[in-house]
Structures are given as structure tokens and as C-alpha cells.
Length: 101
Image (cartoon, rainbow, N blue to C red):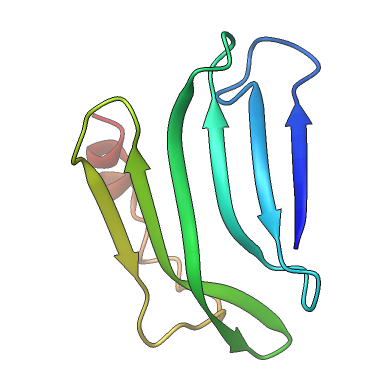
């Protein structure tokens, strides 16, 4: 297991400090910790499950733990993963305008 510490070169980024746990066997990110400028732990992300789609490897399960609010977690599970192009009709002007509100 590799543990990689990353530091941003300027302060105008969402996560100035990151710590990554990467598997040596297949170079997949298993865990990521995000820190503030004061190096306070803000969020932990876990990637326990991956799926191979063609030549790409995509996380199938992603868990995000808010380290500032106890008990607040988000889990994203992807089913039927595809890397095919989406038709232009998916992101209409109306959809994009609603999403930006």
C-alpha cells in the first residue's frame, strides 16, 4: 500500500492537502483524506469497490464521510456503468440552467 501526501502549490483550491492510500497491485485509490489550510481533517472518501469497463477501471462504490458533522455520510453506488457518449439531448439548455440554480 502506498500512502501519498499531496500539497497544493497555491491556496485557491478546494483541498489544499490530500492524503491518498493507493494499492500497490493495481494502483487504485482506496482512501482519500481531504484537509483544510490549517490541516484539519475535513472529509474522508473510501473507494471499496471498482468495476472494469472496457479498458477503464471505475469506482463502483464511493463513500464520503463528513469529518466536521458526526454521522453525516454519503454513499454513491453505480450500476450498469457505461463510458458510452451521451446524446446531446441529455444536457439541454433548460437542464443546465436548472442545475446551476
